[in-house]
Amino acid sequence: MELIGIGFGNLLAKDRIVSVINPDSAPIKRVVTEARAQGLLIDATQGRKTGSVIVCDSGHVVLSYLTPERLLAGMESAGKFGG
Image (cartoon, rainbow, N blue to C red; front, side, top):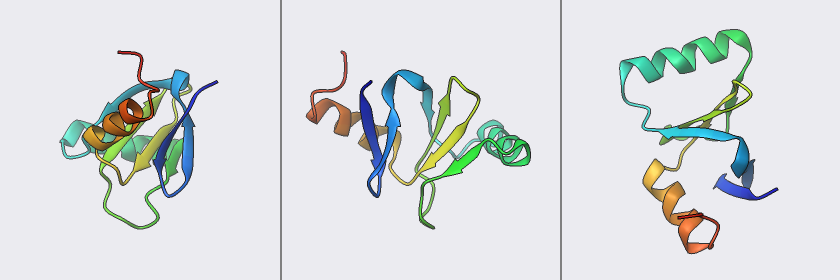
């Protein structure tokens, strides 16, 4: 199982990620609100502004302060991105 850093020493299983999305659109804000109401939201921002919303195959929604671009750059520089 490969893990990727999502900020502040927090790690997420790479094979469980469905998508990494910019948090600024209204539909994504609704996804976050619904996940919070269902108890499926994991906030890993430590109080910082949300940079990306990560949707997992389990239905969990993870908030990270890193932007999607920074998450991708981190995966590529660590040699963990399969592209």
